[in-house]
Structures are given as C-alpha cells and as structure tokens.
Length: 193
Image (cartoon, rainbow, N blue to C red; front, side, top):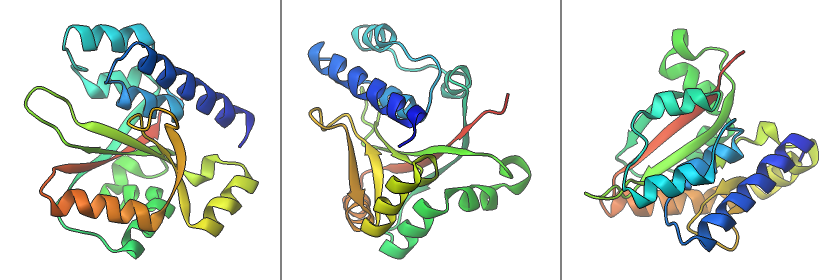
C-alpha cells in the first residue's frame, strides 16, 4: 500500500481498538469511512451517539463533512453469482456511472458499503470494501491473483481489516439475502475540491 493507504489503515485499526476498549458496539460506518479516507471522524462522537442512542441524523451531510458522498444505493433482494459480484467489485465506477451517468460520470470511488441487519432499535451493521485501485501495484497484484478484496469489518475486533476472496463475499452476501435479511449496497465517492 502507499503511504496514504497505510496511514488510513493504521488510523482505522486504532479507532476500532479504542471502540473495543470502551465496549462501544457501534462505529462500523465510521470505521469503514475512515479507511476510505474520511477527513474528520472522532471517537468521542461515536461514543456520544452510542450513549445517547442517537444515530447519524443526515448521512449525506455527514459524508459531505468527511469529503465523501453517496453516489448510489441499491437494495439487494436476489442472490448473486460469483461472476456478478466479481464484476461489481472490480468495476464499481462503471456500475456507478451506469446507474446515473449524468450525476456519477467521472466520480472516483472511495469504497463500497454493505449494510444489513437493521432492527427496530439498532442501525444496520456496515462492512466496507476498499477499491483495489487505491492500493499499491504489489498489493493490487496479490488481490487480483487471490481474487480478493480488502474488507473493513468491526465485528472482527481482533482483525477488523482483512482480505476476503470474492467467493466468500458472494457466499456471505447470498446467505444474508436467502435468510430474508435486508441488505443494501452503497457506492461512496470522493468529493472534488
């Protein structure tokens, strides 16, 4: 990884470790965004939201404050083939542009968010998938050879950033869908300044 990506990963690991030490079960969205290059995420904000049971009131404004934006969102209802998931993860910019060319053409992908398991009193759990294009050439080659992607998942407290093969991503995604758990996919883009 390049220097910027290493710093993002290091900051995300530190952030998740602090959440674990404070026994704060939320912060999955913030951790994913931090790994994607969010500009201004603070641990005390996540702790405050958890203690007062408040969520992020306006996700679009929150993302904008982080110099990110939501390019498109999709509800996932039907199981996917591994080939479809691989195409989606390898070419998120193409999929994003196809969803609304006028709005999304030329936008740079910061990452993908998978949200699932929203219940009455709890927000959904969010897992981030980082784009291969932000990785160094060596890591991109490893990821392509292994058919893997970098995942940010705070539910794995000891190792919240790990590599996952496309087959495993597809199987996990399909397991959620088949079991009737609401799943949504969100394309996060970088704002141009």
